Amino acid sequence: MATLSEVVSTLKKMAPLTLAESWDNVGLLVEPDVRKPVSLVFLTNDLTEDVLEEAVSVDADLIISYHPPVFTPFKRITSDSWKSRIVSRCLSRGIAIYSPHTSWDAVENGLTDWLISCFDGTVSTIQPLNINPEFSHVVTLSGSLSDNTQLGGKEIRAIVESSEFQADKHFKVVSYTDSQLQLLCNSSSLVTLNKVSKSPKYNLFFYANKNESLPLYSTGSGRCCQFRNGLTINAAIEKIKRHLGVDNLMIALARGSTLESTICSAAAVAGSGASVLRGVDAGLYLTGEMSHHDVLDAVHNNVTVVLANHSNTERSYLKVFAGRLLAEMPQLNVHVSKVDRDPLMFV
Image 1 (spheres, rainbow, N blue to C red):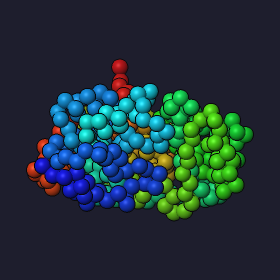
Image 2 (image 1 turned 135 degrees about the vertical axis):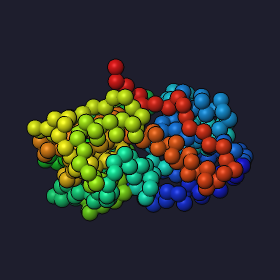
Image 3 (image 1 turned 180 degrees about the horizontal axis):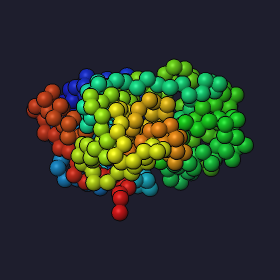
């Protein structure tokens, strides 16, 4: 057993929270008032209600959820929303929640190094690309409707455009996911975004950073591997499948390539990696998801794209981390969720 503060201190030592992205919500997210020793630590990629049931069944004291289950601010903790139900139940049962997210991506020998390790070669860190210096700020937006229904990135974009913003004139979309929108804009546009966020129809939140050399992505968020020996695309795909433990992948072949074409390098980013991979010189991009247009850009720049679904590029690292945590704190019991899975599947 250990105290919660001892476990949290160890987690921070293993992956300093200062490495996390500025927009991220990492660290100890739920701290119950009930003070009790931590005996069982439960690891999951996503903390869903099904996963919480599993954690409760094994008497977990601390849940480490790679993706933060608390990201946008709550206005109330009730049973109306699945995320607030999770927080409420954890508090009532004395279960703490910790999320490392992008600190695990950035740290040396962390998740991203594990992801690229399916290839044999010289690994280097992907340097961030300042993609549009004429825009002064990088903005991350997230939010929900007035009934607490979470808004996806595409829905948030539609709200922004309904305020007479014009894409590529007033702003440029960097990326969007199922929970947020990232865009570039000028300082004058921040005033308009602030007005949009105060609409009674929505609960919008945004974070703005200067569009400088490290606007949004830490230097640790992606890796590139120069192979010792060339690989056919088909051989690279088989390596990825074995490494991730998946049977199927989505493939977009580089223009003019076949599965028997040889490549000499690959770049990898966990989760949604288009904004970090954009412009990287590699024969293959490995990530979880990319937009249709980002895939088209890649294949027309002679890059083959391999997509595994967002969390499939992250989940298998949990077993690796479990071993590392036990090496640091052998007095703990560490369980990896068996219920946690990517919500999308190939049929």
